[in-house]
Image 1 (cartoon, each protein chain N blue to C red):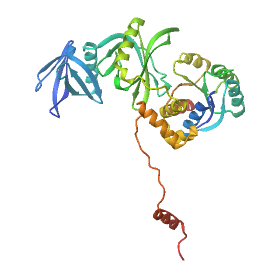
Image 2 (cartoon, rainbow over the protein chains, first blue to last red):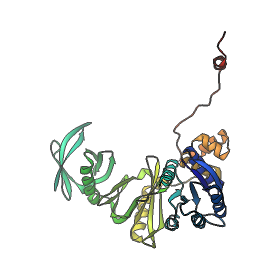
Image 3 (cartoon, helix red, strand yellow):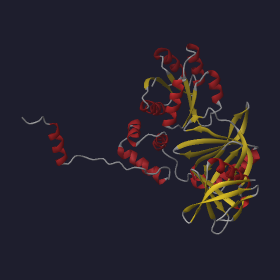
Image 4 (tube, rainbow over the protein chains, first blue to last red):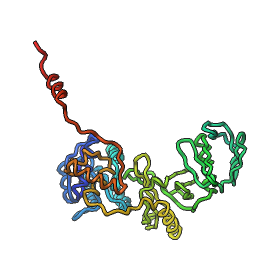
Length: 120
Length: 269
């Protein structure tokens, strides 16, 4: 079980992820709606893991991932994006993402991926 | 080429027999004494360790063959490569995504794709994947990065044990287009013909997909039980959902109220 920061620009997706992660026994320590906020919240809350949407206004998920990795090279970030944007995987993994979730997703698989990344 | 031990269903009972697998067909030993050319096979399904081999005919004959996976693997390979089906040589990746999570060990497999009456088969040297057409939830001609270049691929999504599995097929675009048309025709019953979903219904659909129950959906979307029922009715009408459970909402009878109030009273002196 871990302390998790959820980053997504839509309230709906944040609520869905929060619900799934909470049901898996995780502690949701914070939420952010864009990349800038994600970096600031990461520095403030120091979560065990971040779920990061890729496509967001202002600073996108890849840029936020870079920012977080610069601050904490050991940060565990699971990228989260829509179907059809799988080509972002390579870039995100290269940047240091530990996992990748494609929307729409199913709760058991999300929890499995989070568990894997937290245990890595 | 190889004689393998099997059990074949006859009149509701499993009968021990042997199959001689050859290049063009198979010969089933006694008591069946039957020669089956692979070209006469029009459909192939596997449920656990039983193969359902449908042979051309009026009505079609279904052979149920049970054996160990090693034998079934060999049999399937020969049947899929020679049966009566739309078949193409291609690269495939299956599963690439399972339940929304990228399969980290997914690789492109060189092999064949066969579209049969009720299922699509991906077959390579080491792998055999079956996708029942009735479980296909989406097909799309899209692009994917392959060896640092954007390549045209067909993406096939299907349900397996409640999980959505994404697979990809890679081959020349002209062949992909034929495959795409073939699959579109085979799954045309899945196409939406109703009105577009309103935003709340779409959100409810997404939450159901993610595994949320009615109570969680009401809480997450801050909608009433009645409003959710209205959305469910709409999704049911469009054939997008099915009812799996009807939960009861109840209130206590006077007898129930008395029982509960009595149960919390301190013991009488």
